Length: 71
Image (tube, rainbow, N blue to C red; front, side, top):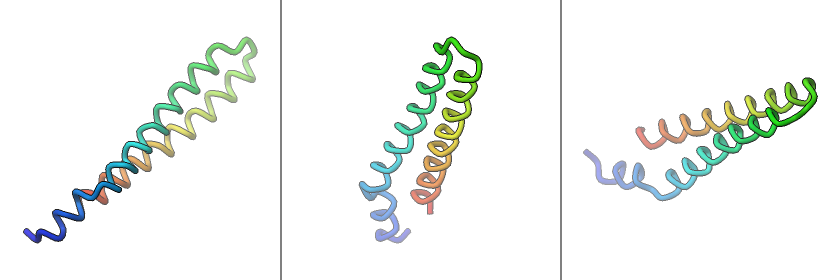
């Protein structure tokens, strides 16, 4: 195994971006709970759609960084 690839996999930037991606996903989850507290159905639906988009972005970023680490 090449030590350069091991050092690249253990680079701090990968893990910082991974933490950022997980935080984005958690924000998406909490945003959904904010929408559940809304009294109006159309507002609740809007929060649900926005939280789904944020969650998908966070999950996509997480998977991308995991695959970068594994390369």
